[in-house]
Length: 263
Ligand code: NAD
Image (cartoon, rainbow, N blue to C red):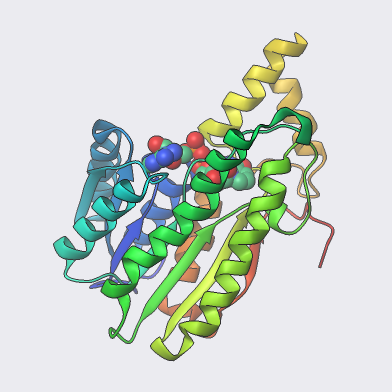
């Protein structure tokens, strides 16, 4: 069990009813922090908030909000900031852009991806900062992708926009250092969430092969020879959000089982 070293802290985790966001919210709550949770459907956010509160014994606050829109981000983050009387930890997250190569995407597709992946991160930070400044403690963690470090085939939108989020994180780490707000990127390789299962199932159906075979192929490309568990990624985010990470800012930390070859 992790230390309860975040008691009294307030965390806001975006896009967190399932997958990496939920695993991050859970891991932060297990360290003792209050956690605000959002999803587009209020019922999904409420279910996650209930389960995490029960397991971790902390206050949680669910909210129905679409983080790909300015209004959704504002409603969630202002609501959480007012409810908790400030924000110590912001975990920036949203659904990922679709897979595909350059010739598949129109201007409208690019615009949607920019809103979802880049502008949602910009807005999440902008809305949270007034609630974070002046507290003497702050952590911003961007949930990104290993494509921030090494491009992925047939993922052009991610390959272009994830490095932009790293640039945002690096800039913020310098601008916010005097406020003692530390800013980092947590970059997943392949972690077994609903999103990963959905994309593999769709490919398995297209190619007429069992989904287990595709998952095994992915695992074989990873030095640790397995796909990651969401809890393993959540532990990284919670560490970066915790007092333990007090001298870490402006970095990208991978949880990828050793797959990325770059340093
Ligand atoms: P997921 O689909 O399992 O979960 C996404 C969560 O975000 C859900 O709770 C969903 O309700 C919520 N959500 C999605 N869009 C939202 C919106 N517009 N507003 C509010 N909530 C929204 O996905 P995941 O695997 O957890 O992925 C999270 C992020 O990490 C994505 O950007 C994804 O591209 C990225 N990522 C994941 C992996 C992986 O292996 N899982 C790898 C690289 C990058």
